[in-house]
Length: 544
Image (cartoon, rainbow, N blue to C red; front, top):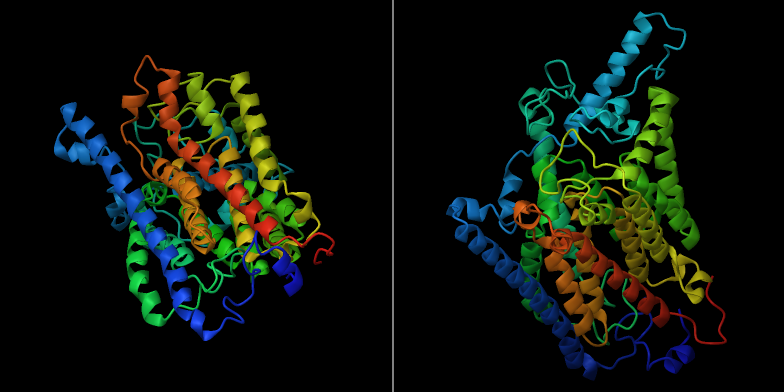
């Protein structure tokens, strides 16, 4: 916190410091100005939300027009665009995560039983001669890619009826998991309901971030906030809040990656909620925020890179929470399933990093490069195939991943000298969001539903914009472009990747990743602005 003398010296560059009550020391005559200052940003946010919804509707209409022009029926045309997919939240969804997880666990148990029956000396718990990951690499139509710690969740749930629980290369075309289906699993209806509710909770978190703006503009405040924000009369605040909430909820439901996760039956839906809650809780409850990230690490090990991020930022409580949960979970999995299967999982990750996926739904740099070099058919999902190894794809992916993670971790010197606990809360949240975005974008395989957690990042930035002394029209326009690129999808990949494929045209099929790249740049830019605005004046010692 800057003393009054330092704050006055930097008043031209920043508004009242973060954490101070907006309007402290302001006379009663400033109240009307406060109302105007706080309602105008709300109108800008609502207008932004309406604008992106209109843009998405126009894109959907254009997509449907192309579909109809190609001779498809109206029903087929409606299915060619993602804008109206939110209705699928009422449907049970698939088994995209649960089926391969059950298959992998069944294989491990079968191999252990065979080892014990043979009386092998190494037939203890977890010591198995074969691995579920071996089958994934020999293309068994399952592609099980979760760590062994993910099985801990399954062992708490009732088992699906029927055997064998295994994917097979001889399965019918288009059916990746022929022996496991939702009708055979009593827990599936309840998990489907939980998945639908999780999607709605994720939308609600994003709405809350932008609609509930205490003093300073966002939860915890933003430096440079417009004077008087938070002093509005109750009627003035309520007048625009309902419209803003409705517009934000509509935009969230139109965000296709959220709905896609539920449609597939993906565990990622719950991870997105956990990370969104971690984002919200970071400033005031860093230990609980870290614990949620630790839980996510048990399913997606790449989230473990939040630990060096937290250490670099001196988020000690966050690191303690994340480390305790992640270490306890993986230690339990190691004791339960043994070392061999964990080593084989690392080998699987190494192989996946070499090749990745060319299918258009892989919205990562690896997917972009695979499609650019046309290593495999991008329009058709191959349940029993990976693209061939290409050194250009591998090393391009590696260099790009290092660049993304480096940009998220890097801080200006004035911020490095300060504990993250002294940062403006909004800057800490933007920093967390940037790291989460980089972890997703840098992964060799990042499916559409992995980007569902980006929705709260959009509304967090909107809240930051609303708290700025002046509405940042340029940044808001870039954010709108990013939203439209990420929220909408043309569900006819054959239109883009028709043979012979054109590399430049194929880039259009990677629009979600490019939209995420724009969002990532905005997160970095506004993180830097907030940190600079809250930096101590020259000659003053940085807070510790």
